[in-house]
Image (cartoon, rainbow, N blue to C red; front, side, top):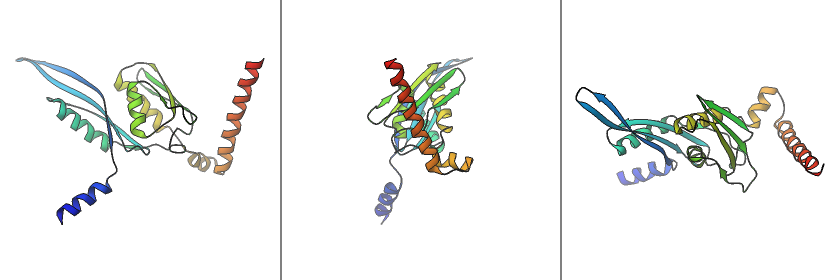
Length: 191
């Protein structure tokens, strides 16, 4: 009976993807010498729109990774995705000197992003995105800036509710704007 309950709880919990972004050796100088420890930065996600990150220190690498993973699972956020594969709109994020620009992309583009941001998008379940890191390339700053940008993400339903409009009005305006940008680019190329 206990085994059946164990299998049931394993099926209820969604599969969590874990990505190790960075590991650092840190030293604390004391009267008796240096105390070495390890700091780990982890990103976890379910691949369906939930993602979180955590960082922790410990004397041993596996323990630091375990603590960071537990912290990341506690700090997970939900991000609205368009068609389950990309972002609804372009967004900027900033944390300290780290700035990121995240742009939605058409189907088949893939994940065009640097190391720490790529780990976040893979754990989140995004398949098509173009991202650019501006400023700091420190993994901690890049992950924090990426999460700042993702927290600003809004889906059309939220925008429509805030502006007292229909969702169809918001989405149709987006398609008209995208079409006008394409027409403008074609005209500039021809002219």
